[in-house]
Length: 127
Image (tube, rainbow, N blue to C red):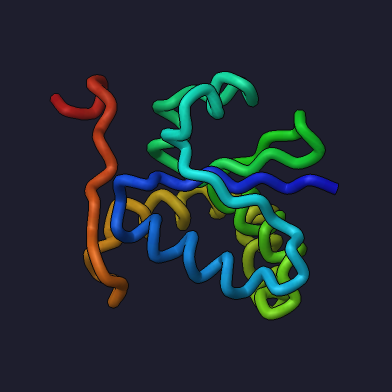
């Protein structure tokens, strides 16, 4: 079962997170790629704007998950992250998953992770 994770290779926060995922993936369940790899997003029909806003995961070549649902899928593949599954699942079921994910993404600077990159705001939100 292929589970492909796309991260922003220009973002220190995302690169750090991708490195941590690779270290936790001792059973080689994930394929982790920089979303700026030429032709990669097009191959999986992932819009760049979505990939820049939320983590994207493709399962079995055609099932795409993003944000909190992507984190749930990733956690299911990495035994050391299984402890987070109930939180991710419950937040999604309560309709809070996207809100929590987006808040954390917008406030990355509050978390003690090396580097920071702001998420570009869509034109509609800049007013």
